[in-house]
Length: 514
Image (cartoon, rainbow, N blue to C red; front, side, top):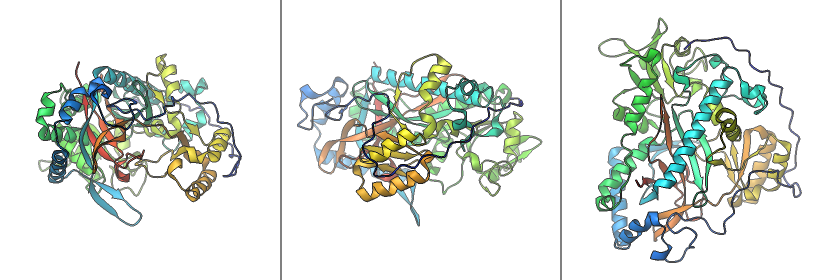
């Protein structure tokens, strides 16, 4: 990894946005990619058969064996299995922290005992689309920290990249091992029809959820061995091995036996269970900033046997807190001198510093253009049509149609900082309009898609509930997409909010082998 001096494209200062009234008259929608409109949500078990009784002729082929099995199981047995699953998760300590205004609480993520099932051909579409997207994003990140060809060509406005708070000038000219910036990506997908999948969000900094994918499978295999024996389900338990192989392959200088560690913010982080779980599965140490130090341009770990050099850091600490000498000076989570060791080529960071510029929600709209520019291909999976509120026309339309749209903060996550217009009150929409006008560049908006539903066990039995899906792409010298992922489910009838912090649950996801 060597550094070179790169002269970045000069960014023009952003024009001051025009002020629009929250109660603007009807405004024509800016032209966006068309989204299929369906009279009913697509149900992955029964297609568009409606909400009546599930009869054999309504069931899609991929769910046929499951439906026949389900018909033989009484509802009280599903309730017994749900309680058993909850007990197992409590024993394993699989919890997450929910942050509130005054305090935080530790909770279990509700687990649904009904699996989500994909056919092999459905999975192939997801696999190819996600891998294509991550290849293009890696090419984009290399480009913006080197020649900036896509900016020079005017395909993406330079100011949207170079003044983005997640763009890291410290990464300019730095050649990272294998050209891989995003080693682990979690892409959030939604579905509206048989082959209608959309990317809702790219998670590229410190994506979470893998541990739930793995433990959901373990619990389901324990609860329903007879159901598993009736299906040929692709395994997910090889994810840690793929992850470890990818990290080792990108160690500095191609060393044969690198030392890999997982850098965590510590036990009070909401995803700490996952940090410990993954480190255990990969056979590596979990460390905090205080466990590492830099000497002579190399990173070392304090051990009972003395200092041990560290070659690869799978970091779950955000950029701002990685190195107090380079970023936030008051950070107690990072390692002083880490950036210098990284720039010297003596340690690999996964994911690389500066990846956040590509998973900013306002940059999301440009990913299809990245695919065309770097790969010369059309996107296999489309974006959800998106309004960027720094643009005058988009902002005027959104303010006039808040009752029909979902508005999100560009750096928001976990379902926080967003407005679901159709479910909001008039006052909530009016208050949110003021926030948009105060800082329009901080928001994007999207139509409220009719997300697909899956059979879900609820208090009144099995009923359809809306779901999304996060598969995980691992990139080293090759790309791997383990056949599975994290399905999140909105447990409240009619709700589209699947985030665990907002009351959503999770499901095991089965990919059927052909």
